[in-house]
Figure 1 (spheres, rainbow, N blue to C red):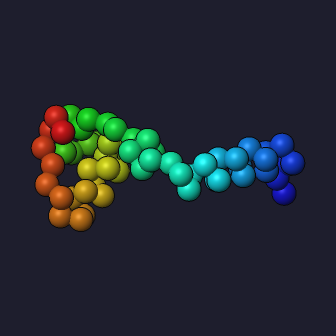
Figure 2: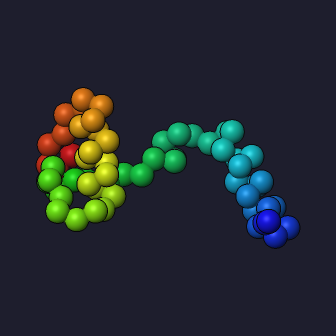
Figure 3: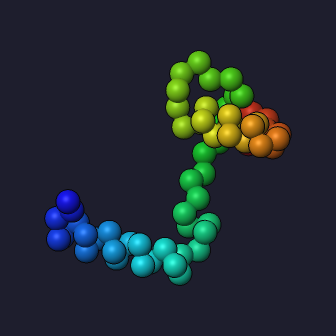
Length: 60
């Protein structure tokens, strides 16, 4: 169960999401390659985009 203080913080941010600009929630990363040998955020992003048919190139 969440502590009361944590619950208050959670509610504050949850309520703020209703009016948030989606661009402020985006995470911007530049990919240097399309094949990553290790698990990382960039590898996951590349895989997700390619799975959806979105073409990528290094430097994007």
